[in-house]
Length: 203
Ligand SMILES: [Mn+2]
Image (cartoon, rainbow, N blue to C red; front, side):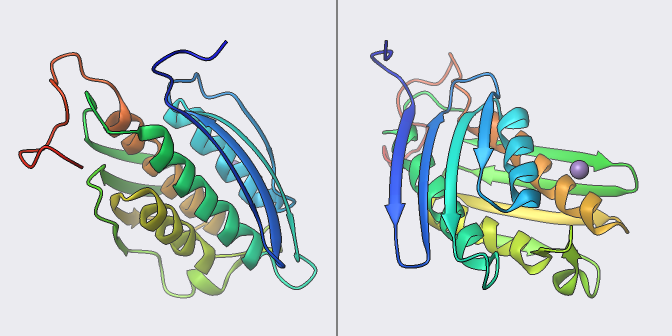
């Protein structure tokens, strides 16, 4: 049964490049069923769900015979759209979140403001990271691209800084986990917040 105030969304998107079906519950426990046909991205979305306490189901297919790019981009767009829809009018949320997450030698910082104003500031990946093929199929440049798509479609201000790291898999994973932890805090319901946490009265 659907909760009356459920912060959930289901988004379907089909183009000539991909088909994406995504269901999300912001007040979940981090359970996920992810099959985007891009294995490393499945690994990252599973980590995002787990560490943001978002229940997430994603089924996607696309022209990965050309490149994983379109499918990864389109799943990220749909994830952003679903987040925006599930947040509703943003009453009672903490709004801001920040996190510092290590993965062995890698260290990433993320700050999220559920602002309604899309903005991404992304820095610190080591030179050449964007050209690395993680797992042989996931281009390092896609990490920033996914944060752009999520931030712009969800209406989030997102800062991600890589503070340390050598292994591309570790760096990418630390970035997604830091984003997840910051988002978890920002979307959380704060019992002290009355209504929408903005002096403008809208986010
Ligand atoms: Mn890993």
